[in-house]
Length: 259
Image (cartoon, rainbow, N blue to C red; front, side, top):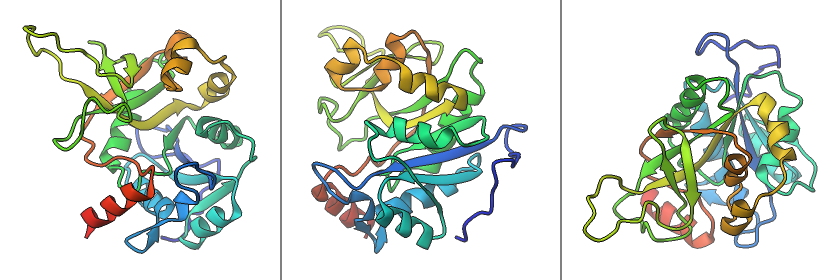
């Protein structure tokens, strides 16, 4: 794909005049998998696969990879996508995205994780639509999915989310929620959280300025900071058949599954 010659004054065609930009955070340093964004899957860097999946979204009008490593930026631009260099001292991907978003004229910023080479474009669109259709008092949205047959609901690496009748998140946890008490009816099955976030652009600087919270620190889940400070998160429910790559072993499994 040739790099899209978009400028910050573009007006999106989707959902009226709402402009949607996807910002993909990518860093070289990783304890479990250094250089992960440039690891090859089917002959292409993981980060390029993520860009290609985001491009298939019907709402995303521009894609920017936010990185602090020139090697990643070079690979992204060589594939025809846009990259922005950021500071190296960001504590997380949200902070890195907020640095880039502050320079953009957009209504909605989509945080597509840089280690999700098989993220379904339909899930990106569901998350965007969840925020578009939420009231102005809802500053962000995300996605949940039923568990796949080969996924262990009790695995703490799979984050679970409980969703209220109004479609908003009640809680995120590494523990199994809801707990199915013996003898109780199976009225609600656990939902896995998909690490995809959509923000109203003006909320991002507020989010990164929020003080860390006890539940966030206990579970090590940044999204809990939003709930603990009293902000709502709209949750769309779709089907996520793939999940992110955290280790070389997971990449090998995904490679085998892709052939």
